[in-house]
Image (cartoon, rainbow, N blue to C red):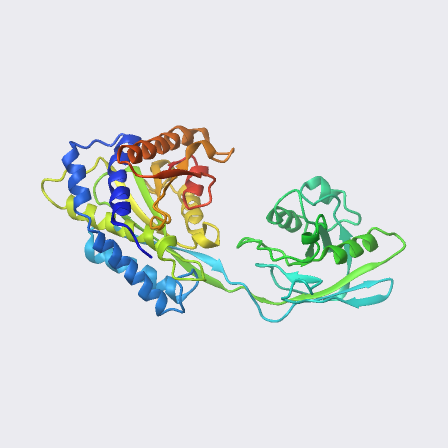
Length: 434
C-alpha cells in the first residue's frame, strides 16, 4: 500500500494547529509548530508500518486481538516508547472472552411425544439452526418447556406477558424491532435456560438461520433458528393442547484472554487538563492491518517520539496541558479497549485518571487510505444521546479540520461521527472528540 508523504505531514500539521484551537492551549508562535512538524520524518512512520507487517508475517498473517501478532505489536510499541521517549508508559489489561465451539451444537424438540432432531450446518442454506457467537455453554438433557415471547422480546412488557413465565425455560424470540444484544440482555434478566432466536421470514433472504454476534458481555446460551423452525415451535408452544419441550447442547471454550491498552503521558503539563490522542493497535483476523490501523498506530508513535524529543530541549516550551498518547486493544471486536479505559476513568478518583480530566480525544484511525481523500468526522451526525457538553467542541473540531484542509488545498469529505471507532466511548462520556 502506498502511504503518501503529504497525508502524514498534513495530519501532523493539523494536530499542531487543531489542539491549541480547541482546547485553548497556549503556544508562543508558529515556528514552534513548524519545528514539531519538521522533526517528524515520514521514513520513521514507514519504519513502524514495516515492523507491523513483519510482525503479522511472523504471526499467521495478522495482528488481531487474542493472537500472538497482537501481543507482539504491544511489545513493539512498549519497547519503542521506552527507548525513544521519556514518557510515563502504563499498560492496563482487560479480559477478552474466547469463543470456540468444541463440538457442533445439537437441538431436538418433542411435541406431544413426537421427537424431531434438527439440522445444524455451517451451510446456512441447509441448516435449521446455527450457533451464536459468544453463546455460553449449556446442556439440557431433560426436556425443558418452551415459551414464546410475544412481539419481538424487546421490552419488559413482552417478557412479563409470556405464558408460561420464561424463568428457567427455553424462550423463543423473533428477529426484529431491537438488537439481538437487547433481546439477550432481557433473556438473561428473566433467567431463561436458553434463548432461541429465529428469523422473521419477511423476505426470501430472511428464511434461513444467520450468523450473529451477541458480544463479549453476553451471559445466556443461544442458538439462531430458521423462520420455519421458529414458527413451528412457536405454534406448538402457544397451543394449550400440545406440550412442546426442547433438548439441546452447546459446548464452547470461553476462556479469558488478558488484552492490553498502552498509554504514554508527557511528564509535564497539567494532568487535570489532558489531551488524549488515541489509535487502535489491533488488526482484523483477515490481514496485517497496515492501514486499519497500522497507519494510525504508526503516526501516533511518530508524534509521541517527536514531542518527547522536543520537550527535552531547553528552547521548546512545555505545554500547559498534559498529552496522553494511547493505543487501544480490541477495537475490531467492538471498541473494547477504549470502552474499558473510559469505564475505568469514570470510576477513578486519582487526579489525572478521571474522565473529567480529559479535554479532548483525537482519534487516529485509517490514515493511510490510498484514495487521497481525508475523512473528517462530521460533528452534526453525533448520536442523539451524545451529552450536550461534548457537542460544541466536537463541532468546532470538524470546522477546524475542514478549514485547514481547505487552506492547504487538500481533498476531504465528511464521514459519519456515529461512534463506530474508539472516539465513541469518549464522546458518549461527554468528552470532546474528533
